[in-house]
Image 1: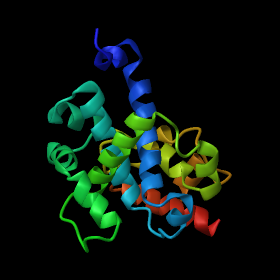
Image 2 (image 1 turned 90 degrees about the horizontal axis):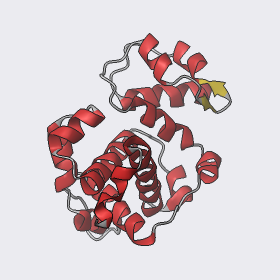
Image 3 (image 1 turned 180 degrees about the vertical axis):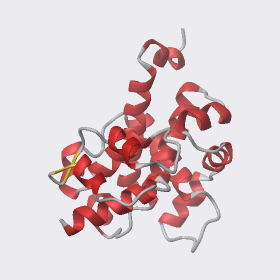
Image 4 (image 1 turned 30 degrees about the vertical axis):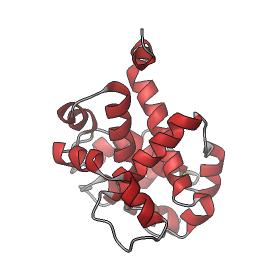
Length: 200
């Protein structure tokens, strides 16, 4: 049996989550690493990057169709298509400053570049401890819990999804209690959390 079928023998969600996290982490590395990330004041790009990591992994590892990926992640088929059609090389040129702008789905191209690197090197590039030092590990955990959510979300649903997560020493439930509802998107969740922990 070919190596391509290896994933079938493992719990699918666990293997997909693990590889998608690695792709997400390598995407951060490609963006310039931990120091460079500090320059990003706005975390609204993180949901797109997390989605793109999952889309690429589901397509490349499990050969899922656009419709299957969209259903699994709770996003539109058009979003899946945009991510998978992104030109990784154009995004690479954009990141290198060789072109001023790129019409491609930047997160999709970035996730493709990261996936290729992860597959080649098969290593963990940013450890969770390092993400904790930077303070962005919570965003990844929140995004993973929001996967497949049907937005807008009400307080009760968000509280359930984020149960047990501690963000900057605060229980997620205490943070959710201070948020405005309904939340419209994963980006809205991250933005509100960032504002609340920033003022704590």
